[in-house]
Image (tube, rainbow, N blue to C red; front, top):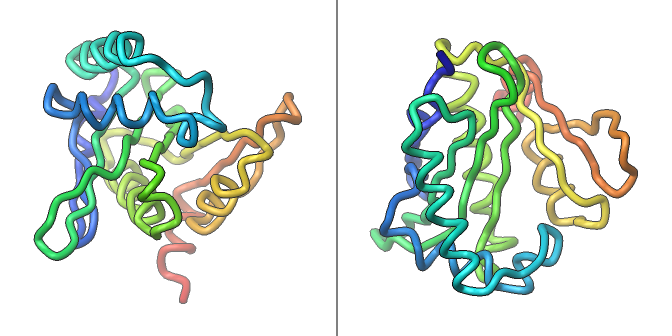
Length: 184
């Protein structure tokens, strides 16, 4: 049986992430219908298409054996909870395999430093949960997405070999993360 990725919800003093639920439709629509957010991700969706994709994401989150999970992320500064974006994790194999993570932030939340906190929280949760047995986290983004390159680099990801020059593959081992997390 595939370990349940949904247990990876987390909260820090400035951000929190919890499993995507019905209450997150507006956040989902705001992301997938925004041309600026979708610029490096894929085609902008209409509200109807994005709503259908949201329902699929909810269904995946409910499946006990799903290898894909989605979390809604919120900023929690000054006792105010503000929508921030979405996180995802995809496990290609049932055990000991790398987990590929993804992040989407609302345009107004990009370059706020909160994306770094979200990634750090998710990476901590993945590597700290022993029953997942994950030693490698991966990510990918379009080569021209300088913001994604900077974000993944600042939390310790290194570039790994990729077959497509338009896409940068990133990799972070648990050992690299632990060294990065304690370095000044």
